[in-house]
Image (cartoon, rainbow, N blue to C red; front, side, top):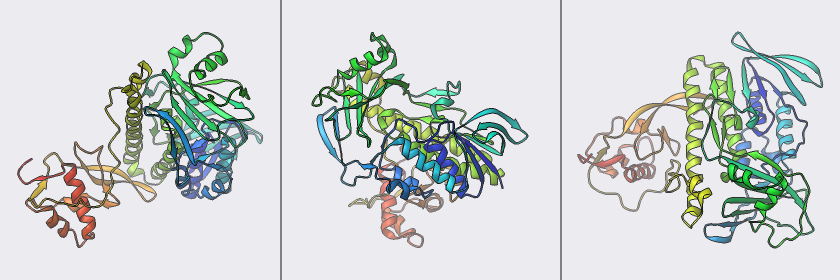
Length: 465
């Protein structure tokens, strides 16, 4: 049985540890803080709970009586409006309790948790690691065949990090008052954007995201600069005289990607590997999603040595693609304000991106009209090998690459594409193509795939490309 060590017990570390235990590995986890502990990131996007089903902790989170998000007040490029959330899938949580539930679930799955604990020594020994931990249990020597670094931004000051957006400073504090906003609020200001979240304990968290250099020019203490920036927003316009319930804090919120996030014996997980622009509000979701992928990569590294390069390539490329996709998404939303007269702050973050990224590959209903002309595969279409997740391992699958789609794809709506196209003759109509696949997939499914390929230029008029 392989031994896996995890450093850091936030959402990424706890999820990775729990999943590795489920996959049959011996796992230990070191976390320096005692839980519950306060932490930013209290608003969770709708995708978090479905991801947590993978480790079985979703029931505990769902029954914790965290608040469901019913609506969000948005003041962006089109002015104030209320965005309804009819399915109430987003959550506002006490992050201290949320993180505690995750790490306790990992413990129940057999993970050895040392908390609070600090690493005194970490060395490579042969093909693995030797780690010495100072904990309540005393000084504990540990070994690991593979180590996961889930220490978040603290990993940092790393020379291997590439910043993927303009330098952004997040200033935040908690407030109390007899009357405070009861729902989340997001607002675009002249030279910053604002986010307010009502928390389960009755406090209200306000965050200001500003250009780091320009924020430092404002005179005064950190608290005075924070109040100056906050006074330019309307977060408290209808709620006068709130009282600070915490010190003002500042963190570096600049997005980044770590270029050295994977090796055969070390994986960086969560924010240690990738931090998104805070505008996405999906940092926790992305950390959990990345941890689940990292667990499959680690399982492959430990049990299928012949797939090591494929596993490492998959992990690196998936993080790079995620970073670029979210960068373009955020730039599109910054651009909406920039086009409405937003200043330097907005133009810098728009970064010349004209719009939002293309949709994720998916199959919709077949178009109401499919041309009867004969078509063939575009000459720009390439067949390539692509590392993909299949079950509990990373494997290499044949895939497609074309200028109109983002990256290479092996599957469309769960259907492997290359087997359908590898021997496809030219000179068939889209209907004839769909019928030629009818022994493998239903006709309506085949029509949907041919329609998708026509829309993106993978299928073109016979002899035209």
